[in-house]
Every structure is written in structure tokens, then in C-alpha cells.
Image (cartoon, rainbow, N blue to C red):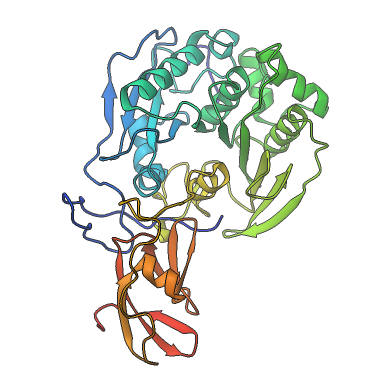
Length: 411
């Protein structure tokens, strides 16, 4: 996060996506097939009241069904909607898991460094300034695309992460969940001077005081609060890691939790995940600490999750784990025909050493593969096979009892 000026989801990742799906035919695959690949980032010139003077862009995968979720994304300082779309990995997950994206974009007229004005009271209050502009974007996208108004989420980096937290507190009736990446606790600053202090070294407050800042954003709200994921690098010298801990303290208190983690797990890239209020699937708050990482959005290009670059750091797929935490990657019926029990392939009991070519859905049914968060992996070798559905066809060979390997071209 650059200094502001007054003007100023469980395991699994999606590999890079491929070519367009043709009518009733399966997509041409590399390793994983998205639901669509012809969609583009599209500007929306008019989306309703816009007191914050923000720009709006949408990304809606082709063929997205009615009632799909929506994720709102807020870039960091000096970035644009196009930058975040190209590098963060969200487009690949929107394609593979079936949800729409809205990108809010800051204008230089509002902030010289293109930072969202998370430190300006007039821009973060409910139905005021930039906060109201984002709400208008959500309302427009939900109505225009037939999306599920009960499954709207927001994520942001740095200044965008700080703004994401402010939006979650101001609109618990609008957002079901959020992700604060290298951000700042809600209510930390009320002007530029405060903003510098909040960024580094950060402010010290009790959990109750931090929680009060959330409660003050929407007094009298008695409904559910959003599920919140907090991401922070332990070597972030721009926005001190203390801010990540403070955000966790804030949201656990707001949720009525005691602040102690109920479950902990180790993820790739030296990442420790602490879950508050339940397990990874049920927790109200998750704290992802990436060891040795600086300031930026964690990505994992080797697994097809984003692209490394300035403020996009090769460490772990934060997008994928966030999708899993929110539950957006859950797959309930991989068969688009609606048949809950499609006819399995005829090769259910191959001879040892025989190559079996079948859909990933049938491989899982037959015990040759397993699915995790909508992706398929060969039993034994854990070779990635792509999406778990009836369209993606792969070849497997049992090279030893119970050990299956991906053998493209073998059958």
C-alpha cells in the first residue's frame, strides 16, 4: 500500500484455462477446463448512483446460470481493474467454479496514487462516497446478470483490502463474506496522518475496541456478519503484519468469539491457516499468515493461479483458498444434464496395467481418482486431472496395485 494522499477456498487450485466451449461439445483441454473462455473484462459506464466517482468493470463467464455468486474485487494502489484481473487468478476461478466478477476501479481524480480512500470518513460510511458506489455496482450486476444477492463477496489488496473491510462492516446485509489481503482494520484511520500510522507500525487496541469499530459502521444491525478471511505476509514492511492480527482480533470479537483459534493447518508456501469459530469449512474468521512474504497478493503461477509481478507474489494461491473458505468452489452435481447418477463408463474393472480413458466423474466413481474442491486427482500418484465433471476425459493406468498415473496418449 503506497502512502495515501488527500487527493490521492480446501486444497486445490485451478490450472490455466483454455479454449471456448462449443455448443454441446466438451472444451478442448490442457489440464483443466473452464466453463467458458470467451468472456472479457467489460467496462460498465452507467450503474446507478456513483458519489465516489469510481469505475466499474465486469467479468461474466459465458453460459453462467441464473443465481450464480458474485465477487467484488478492489485493486491496490497504483493498480487498475485490468491489472488485478490479469494477475490475481480470479478470472480462472470465475470460469471454473461459476461466478461473476465486478471490479471497482479508482480514478486519479479521487486519489493521485489510485488508492481507494479507506481513510476518509466520507468514503467509507454506509451509503456515502466510494462505499455507496460499490453498493450500486453490486445492485446493478445482480439485477443485470440474474445473480444470487445472498452470495455476494468482496476481496481487496492493500488499500483495496482496507476498503473491503470497511464495506463488510458497513454492509453486512449486502456481503456474505470477504477477504482482506495486506489490509488495515476497520475504523483505524480518520485521515491521512492516521493512515500512515495505521500502515506501519499499526495501532494497538483491545479486541473489544476493534469490534466496536465494526459495530459502529451499522448501528443496530442484529443479523449475521460476513465470514472474513485475512491474508498477510510476515515480511510485509509496507503494511505491518500487526494489521492482519488486528483485523482477526476485530472480526472475531464482532462475531462474539474469544479470539482463540479452533483449528490450524499448514498450507503450501509456508502458509499457516488459523480458523476461528469452527473448522476451515465452518469458521467465521480465517487468518492466513504467509511466512517470509512481503506486500502483495499471494499467487501460485505454477499451479495456474495468477501471474507473479509487482504486488503479485509467488507464494500460495490465496484466491483458491479464499474461494474454498467462502464455499464458492463446492461442487454438488458435476453432471450439467441434471442427472444425479449418469451411466458410468463401461470400463469399471480394468485389468492390471490396462489404460482406462473415461470422464473425470467416472474415474472418481470407480475409485481411480478423487475430487477435492471441484478438481480431480489420480489415486496414488495424485496427478492432477482437471475439473471434476462429465466433460473432461483423461487416461489413467494402474502401474501398481491401487496406484494410478495420468497417461495421456496411452489409450
